[in-house]
Image 1 (cartoon, helix red, strand yellow):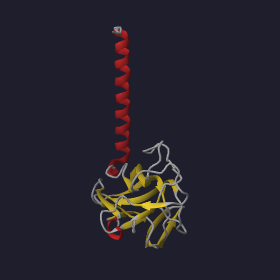
Image 2 (spheres, helix red, strand yellow; image 1 turned 180 degrees about the horizontal axis):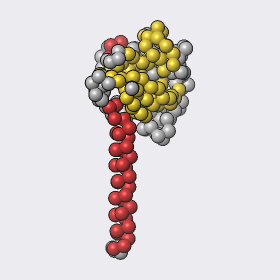
Image 3 (tube, rainbow, N blue to C red; image 1 turned 90 degrees about the vertical axis):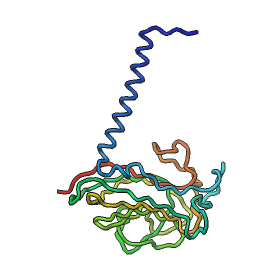
Image 4 (cartoon, helix red, strand yellow; image 1 turned 120 degrees about the vertical axis):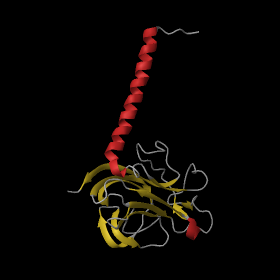
Length: 217
């Protein structure tokens, strides 16, 4: 039986308590930064593959989507509707960070903004995964995995973009695999600091983190 001295016990309790306070402070700071956009802070688009990840996946391999619960052409999708906070009648500039592992998708009729972000427009292919954010006010929508051409490849993304959202607006986050199949994470890519790191995700995902929210003056 080991008996700890009072000083050692107090030191241990102080250490544990300090760690808890620091964790709570970090969480509170994150919520404060997200502010009116807290409903989407940490949201994840996820396209899981069925089964388990092979030990030695084939380069460029595709696989079955675990989202499918019926017709793969109509059930390979998901949607979440979130309410933006803030005050009615006010508009906010919201800076978002997007990180994940995705396949390419083409879009048309909108505006390319950087390597992957696409403002407005519509899908320009009928089989690859669509990652879409729609805002009710001001009415607008965005795609997250734009490329000039599709193909059996997978890549990581890590970028920030600023969009405008009115107080009280509805935010619709929608993923559509279109055909019940997806490009697997055959390269076992990992996004540092994003679950399930350091392990690779068996499928595709995009995580949204709120960086900043500023009222438009």
